[in-house]
Length: 304
Image 1 (tube, rainbow, N blue to C red):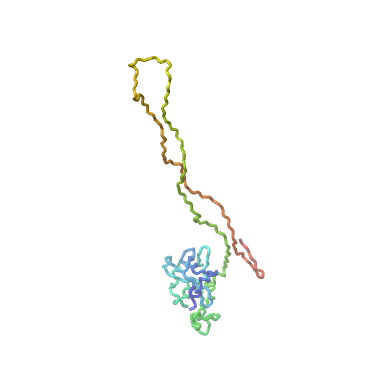
Image 2: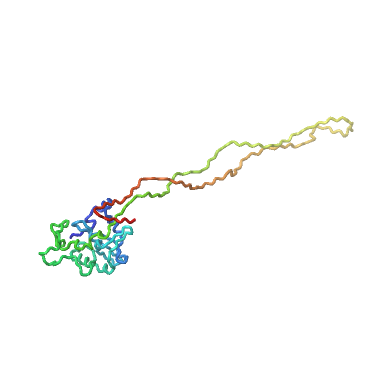
């Protein structure tokens, strides 16, 4: 067996992703589209050639789009759109996907299985197999193949096929174009609301001495005595001599009535207002620039 699942071939794939390598967990979020931009599934896994570490197949989970099976798509048939997180399979139709053999176990992938897969994608009348498979005198590949990982010798599987016989299926689109992403950093300004403090407003009682002035009246007796100059004699029977009181006058006075009462002195309304200010911040940001080096009479058409 020369094919391994990506995670088996690269057990430290998460560290590779952190170092800028392929992020398999992120690739599994890519959708797969056939001819006519018809969605046929999503990436489930990636199969790697254990002999040289090259990617050979995308394992596509068709889900509910096509009978819920998994199929193999040669990497050379694909165009990856990283921005839209899509993988387009060039020339693939939904009918072809329906006729692809189901992939459920890597152990069942042998030479015959792969030929069934390749036969679905190859143009009619072509084959990637070496001629005269039954003759042991003629080699089936042009160059010897390295021993698979974990095997003591070269298996019949490895002797029967060389992936470079089908460059249209397995060359990862380097025949068409290569995409290089230039990255840059940017400052992102955001706000978060946090508690800046607390204001407690309460009441307390203060005591002070208050003075008031109240005018009061007090009555008093004033005795006016007027001498009589014309002292005319009166009859003896008219004279009323006695020792008892002859006049009674009530005397009144005002006394101050001092007491306390409570009144509202002031009303206090507590509310909040928001004031805005602009906070300036700066930091160092990085960006990548393209370095172009040419050899010979290379012509570069720069399109921006």
